[in-house]
Image 1 (cartoon, one colour):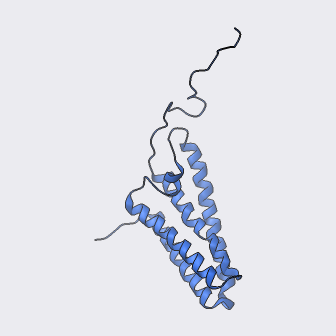
Image 2 (spheres, one colour; image 1 turned 120 degrees about the horizontal axis):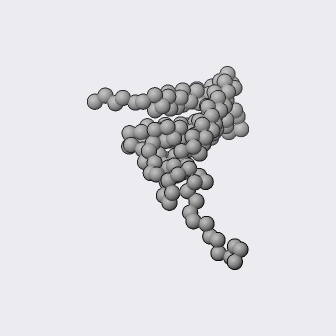
Image 3 (cartoon, rainbow, N blue to C red; image 1 turned 60 degrees about the vertical axis):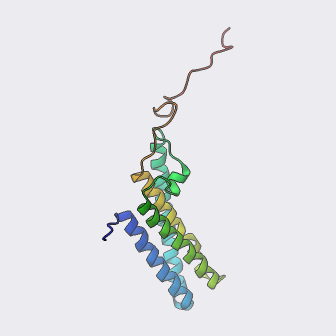
Length: 158
């Protein structure tokens, strides 16, 4: 059976595999590879930060009419199981790789690998904010400022 993965899931796994290979190679041969691996780790971190910023901006826009949750955005609680497995699986591999390689060579540039899983979490949020559906806001479905309930006027001008 052939599974067709959308671009975001493929991107997540491609970068995860590149991270695993780079971090593992740097753990095995730290002298020539620790510096380039740290640079790659920082690049993954910056891409993850960009995904976080984009997610937060889009979530702010969507939250005016939809009930977004932290678990729905970052842990993909409402996502289809294959998407959850793909994105959270890549995140788990990133976290394990980061801790194992940093522990293998403590106090070296491999510690920058701890920053790399920000990418996986950022891509989870990016998927959720662009593809997930959330329920409409409860108690007034209009934009913020338009869904205020009745105004309490007791005591005013009486």
